[in-house]
Image (cartoon, rainbow, N blue to C red; front, side, top):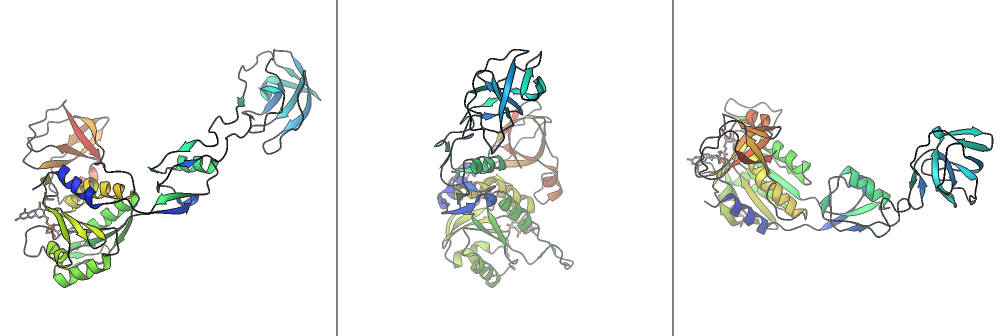
Length: 390
Ligand SMILES: Nc1nc2c(c(=O)[nH]1)N[C@H]1C(S)=C(S)[C@@H](COP(=O)(O)OP(=O)(O)OC[C@H]3O[C@@H](n4cnc5c(N)ncnc54)[C@H](O)[C@@H]3O)O[C@H]1N2
Ligand code: MOO
């Protein structure tokens, strides 16, 4: 059995960044920007007023000063004249500052008397001018690769990009295997259960920049598995669930081998997740996940997501970890790296008593996986451990 770290390196060796496509900005949220972009203009393109009020000549203003109002500047409608000594211009937020102006007096600090203004006794000392290019300047770089967030979309729009180059979404074909499985909503026989893993994994994939395709459930026989694989061969990543262990009906490895899979590894020193396998199958890579529901989801976080990120051009990095303080003693670990389901609250992690990899209720209550190195000794309350947020 290889370590989790070795398995991850082997998976990264199988995964390459995908090609790129151009999408409209309105469809770019969550996509990975594939190449840096530069601002096409200054923002603001002119010195602009930050408030509604009066732009005055220069920046000298004292209570009781009086100015003659000679024009108006609104957003989208600048004032073309130039202010001279003693002159002001009515101005609104976002309007270009007229030539000659050096300060905006907010209208709350002004008394207006026809074409004149008189400044109040207590003046707000701010100039209320946004200099040209204060946000960004033409040529400034927006770096890549990065997964775009709503605030990035706003910035790119402001930089005048209507469309952006992004990495193509990895297509992930998900094949649940097992005679015992039926789709959610169907009526199972007495000896059947509902296929849950495909839905959990598809959601994980879709929420992290991939495009999941849930294929029909494959039965525990080679022809049915071949049929499912045939439907998946155009995917970037094929994820099978179940049939990975040593039982008589665990046929995924054999079915994949029959189709020519070049196996990279099988079995890892991880709990849950021991019977994990991976390899290359035609133009796709394949990850065979264990069937136990929690095992499949944990392997989704620890292996499928990092592979997805590599395909998206985000580099080869393990699931991010953070430190947490142990709230309740964690027992000695066995020989496999254990990803214990737990809850972290205010930096303190509590691992659950029940760690059976069949318990989706426990996984659903968990918000982190507490990483226990092989043979870790008892870790007492107050000590530090590493967790992966899920
Ligand atoms: N003698 C041994 N038995 C087992 C070993 C072992 O080393 N020696 N390993 C155990 C471990 S660890 C795991 S994990 C499981 C994984 O086995 P498989 O990948 O072959 O999974 P299945 O047998 O097909 O299913 C296990 C369990 O999960 C349920 N299942 C499967 N697919 C789904 C799905 N899509 N949605 C919901 N539930 C699913 C299935 O009904 C089984 O209950 O093997 C141990 N055995
Ligand atoms: O490795 Mo299995 O995935 O422990 O349940």
